[in-house]
Length: 203
Image (cartoon, rainbow, N blue to C red; front, side):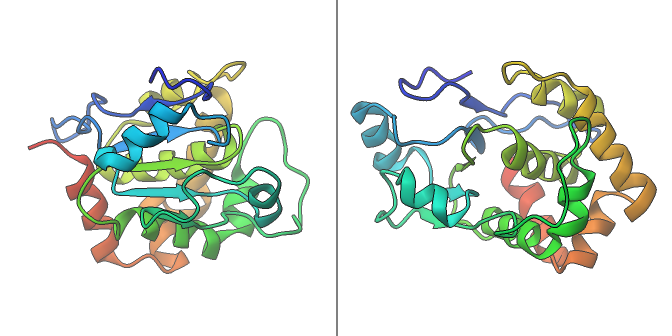
């Protein structure tokens, strides 16, 4: 967990192991809740080069109600990960409908990470749980992190169990042929998948 005053759910994904014997590189991928309460020293530390891109996954109305302190910074990208009006009722035990109904938006969010300049990437939504959790799960799976480790990281968020993420990753395998096949079908190119692996993996 990252000690960011004003954020309740910020952490570095570095240190997770992969099937290829690598580790996720420290500082390569950060996740958090929204930033409108971030303390000024943390804002300045992030601006000073701690990250090369901030990917805000929130709806436009959320950004208007609670503007990011980075909205005018070159590192900031607003990439809404869900349709403005959901065509489904989100179930409590899986993110399968999110994946099935928002493929193009999810692909755009994935590419925003893949195409970021060299340096760390910070992804966030409002609570840092649902949209952030799904995007992080896709990124970590592409990098080779095991499903159980991804579910365990998801459960570090307050009041979360690993089960929804287990069910989500199982759905990707059973319905879409796995994360890679899902992303390719959604319009993420093979070069973006390779770029994420190179970005996240330690030497």
